[in-house]
Image 1: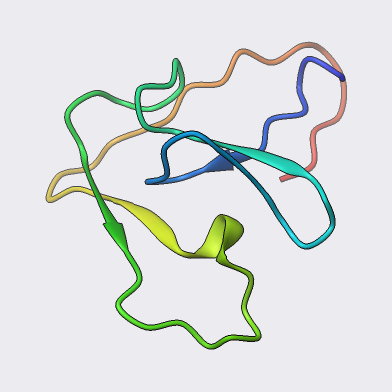
Image 2 (image 1 turned 90 degrees about the vertical axis):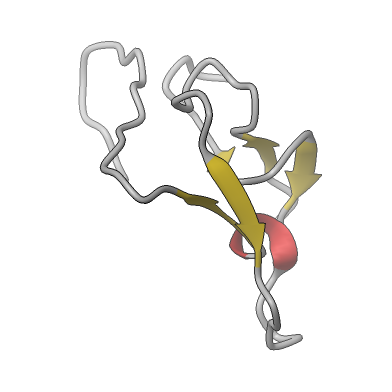
Length: 77
């Protein structure tokens, strides 16, 4: 897997696969997420929307950032 291939599921814990089989990692306690931020689950979700990565979110009353160590070359977000 390339070093810059980061699939981060904001607000989630552990790992989960999306409908295409890609593995997403929860940002809770990860090296990428800022510490001490709350997470939230969607109160309702249309069944046509995949749970991973759309069921959870990271919540904060103040601005915060994620930091990713990236290698040289083009990036796709």
